[in-house]
Each structure stands twice: as C-alpha cells, then as structure tokens.
View 1 (tube, rainbow, N blue to C red):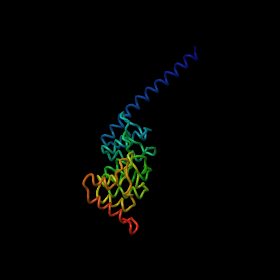
View 2 (cartoon, rainbow, N blue to C red):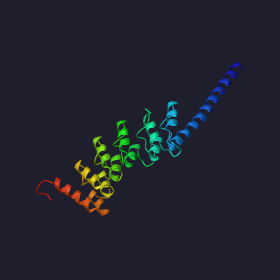
View 3 (cartoon, rainbow, N blue to C red):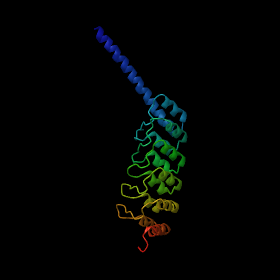
View 4 (cartoon, rainbow, N blue to C red):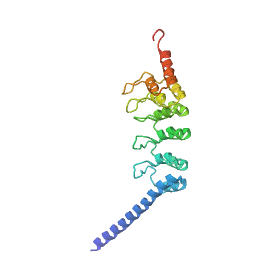
Length: 223
C-alpha cells in the first residue's frame, strides 16, 4: 500500500510538471511568433535565453527566420542570427531558404551575414543565384559567385541563372554572368536557351549581347 501511495505521488508530481511545462511552452510558442510579427527582439532574446528553440515552426510549418525576413522584422532577424543552433538552411513549402529570400529582397548585408554563418549557396533546385539573377541584383550576384555559387546551376526544369536574368533581370546582370563564365548555349527542359528567354519578352538588346558573347568565344574562323 505504501509503495502504491509513493508511486501515485510521484506520478501526480510528474503530471503536474508536464502540464505546467506544456502550458508554459504553449505561451512561449505564441509569444515567439507574435514577437516575430511585431519585430520584438527583446522577447525573442528572452525566449532564446530560456531555451526556446529558434527553429520552431508555426502552424503553417514556416520557420521563424523565414517569417522574420518576409515581414520584414530586422531586429528579430538580428536576434535569431545570434542563436548558435539556428538552422540557416530551413526551407519553406516552396523550397526557399532564408538566403534565397534575402537575395530576392536585395538585402546584401543580410545575405553576407548568413553566408558567413554557413547558409548554403548551392542548394538543390532553385538557388540563391537564380533569385539574384531574376531580380537583376548585381552586387548579390557578385557576392554569391565570390562564395562559389555554381554559375550554371539548374532549376527543377533545367533553367539557369543566365536564363532567368535574360528574361527578368537587368542587362548588367546578364553581362556579369557572361563575364563570369555562364554558358549561353545551355538549354532547359523545354529546349530554350538564354537567347530565346530574352527574345520571348522582346529583349533584343540582351539577345544581341548573348550572341556577341557566343561569337567571342568561338575559335577564329568558326561562325
């Protein structure tokens, strides 16, 4: 009887602690995502100091850093980046990493910080360089190439950063990619080259630039 009573007391204490922990964690969970939305770095720092996981996902399975970049919440981003166990390569439902979103937004400083902390420059599928090329962000293209981004990376449909720059980016982005060695003769799964990407949106100046690059790389006498 005495052992049964002792075990009952232990179980009751365990249950009380577990319930208390869950209630506390639930409150912290809500506070975490509210702080991201309101750019409340103080709350984020307090939660992290108490052991809250910076990689906690919201009900839509979105990573906190990705949410902070999208808001944007710059103070929270800084607080999260200070967390030693932050997963910089978490992906959202579209396969986008925090670095890809920073690059798409043209945030050179944030992209630099994340690369220094280990963000993956060459993830599988769409890459940060595709995003930089699409937006024509020349300084970010330079940053990524300097950090060994694969210049002819293929998206799931075989499109390269040069193709994206040719259709959507700036002429300066196209020129930089060509100067850095991007292959203008590659074709995606639809059989399209970067030149054809440019021609599809009537960017004849870009198509001509690519054609000049192709001619300049051919051996003398070949046309």
